[in-house]
Image 1 (cartoon, chains in turn green, yellow):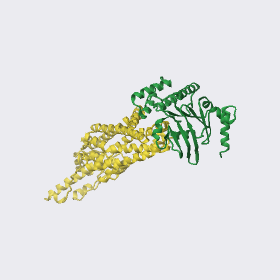
Image 2 (cartoon, chains in turn red, cyan):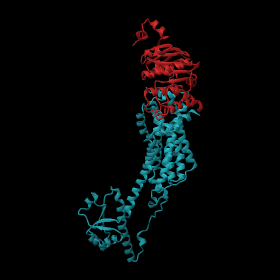
Image 3 (cartoon, helix red, strand yellow):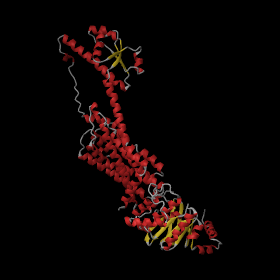
Image 4 (spheres, rainbow over the protein chains, first blue to last red):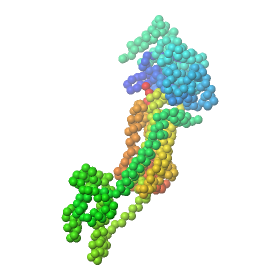
Length: 245
Length: 391
């Protein structure tokens, strides 16, 4: 479970995140939806303690990120916006490196790698160096790397960015599998269809603020729109109307 | 396994797979300098010894004015060349190294017992002709001395009367020390090798990792940034040390290909030298690795880091050049200064002198302290929020 309470973060004069609060529950997929530059990535970066919030708290399974950043990172699996792999290492070596950084013993590491690579259909690339991987192969490797320590909570920044239809569908199935295992999945996206297809709950962020927080269907009714896309557009434009440019 | 060790092993493995790093750190870096050194020294020996052994040939103007002098010079091994039309122009245009002119009045002065004069025409700005000029001057002086002594003896006087004082040379330079003059650049070579050996890793593990966007996921793991930095510094240091060890070995081997006995000097580049150089360099290698990582952490990209580090590379040149231009006696405080300490220490070792415990301790402690400081500053930079953000 990931709880965010009144997060604030600014870069110079720019207020990137203002008073953001939400909760991502176990056994649910929570979507962080917002246009580009809304503050999604900055919010996620504060969750996995890459950045320190100016105000507010982050709690992961009850652990305070400010007091115990290492404990929080241990409880999280993270697929950041930056998916960089080590090009001179094979897919398997990339995953193993992170497993060792999570202090897995060699036996557990081997079992976990085998299981993840089977689940993500990575048999063909396990022994290949990451140099020259396709976008889909890179994302798969990065996801396996994020899950290597079997975390209860998962943070994914735009997980389907750059993936083709087949890969997107496979990714969706994979995320449903994680939900079925009772994990807490939090992901960000700016794509409507993505959120509709996946989420149990949607948190809409615009201009650094939470402007809506509900189930997709409730959100549509709340905005009085015919489709979720209309609802999204209406909510975003309503929020920008009351924010000074 | 400790996280720092995991990071270290991964960085070493990854960089061993990079051909460019390997070639630079373990091939061209450590081997280029020794090869250059053998070629240069041998070329210099060849030129100098070749000139000394060649018969001296000098164009003589007015040889007919002093047949006895010319005959004496011939006996001393000089080859008399025909006179050029314009001796001054011949010297200026480097057609002749030196021309001997015997004026028409030579015979008259000589017979009267007055001081006769000959002229040596040369250009002192051409350094390569100095040996020829000195040889000719020695020959003329020798002939004058012998003749002067004969004249005194003919009048029943001791030749010692005309030379009441003579200064004898007692050169205390050991053969090693004479060699060390040529070797004052050696410490810089070692520092440069260590620098180049670690440079690619310092860039790759910091600026490179950020540019490839893998630093952010790495920082999302439950490993303290301090441990990540220590692992990366360790890998950089390991490559620099390997590079340095190869270079020292290569110099020891290269020393065998230089026939220093012909120059009457000895070089001490044996096992004792190698061990002490490694010892003195050890803290400096750590210091360099920390500085390189620090600079690379500030750079916004791989290219920018390369540019900054190329500039940083010139800094170790300073003490070497300083000591060549302004030779000073090594004092204890110098050993405690990073770079300068290694420079004077290694020069001392080359001369074949033993290095006392106090200078060694000062050198190790001074540089280790600087290295520790550099690591602490780098840790602070590593802890900053800005460092991981690539986008």
